[in-house]
Each structure stands twice: as structure tokens, then as C-alpha cells.
Length: 102
Image (cartoon, rainbow, N blue to C red; front, side, top):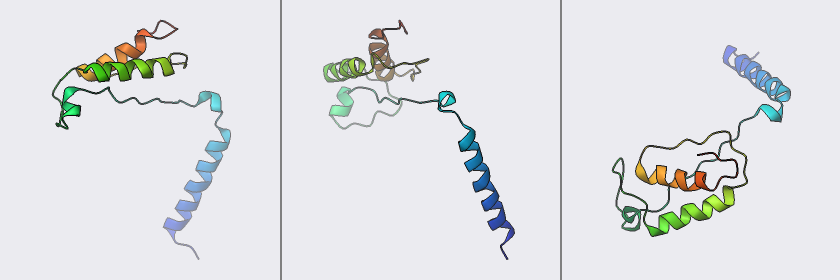
């Protein structure tokens, strides 16, 4: 005889399998997570936290290279932190978009 917790776990597992079987891949959402480019503080191995140093020349180059890789990927939206290093990276990627996403 199984315990109540074991029966519940079996029910949950069955429910998850049924849900996944019904899911159509066209309604799935894919996320692309991007880390900001390098800053001088990264190069110095300094903790940045919520401090706001800008990208350095290497970081700008990294963002431009990533933008080239992502320029033909389909995106419906882009979101970024308001920290300068993150928003600079996102702006560089957005500027290369074929769909005019800014």
C-alpha cells in the first residue's frame, strides 16, 4: 500500500506527462540570456555588484561579435538591466537587428 505522498507524487507525474504531451512546440517560449561584455572592473577581477562601470574596448568588441551571431535570430522582445554595462551590450545587439528592434 502506498502512502498519500507517494500517490500524490504519482498523480503529479501523470499530470505533468499529460500536459507535456498536449503542449505544442509553437507555443513554447525560448529565452536567450546574454551576459554583458567586459568592463575594466572585470579585467581587474573587481566586484561590480550594482556599481555602474561602462564596457571597455574588449567588452564593446565582445558585444559586437555576439550581435553578429544573433542578428538573424528571431526575437519578439529584448530586455536589459538598467546598468550601463548591460544596456550598452543590449544596445549594440539591437543596433544590428534586421527587424529594426531597438
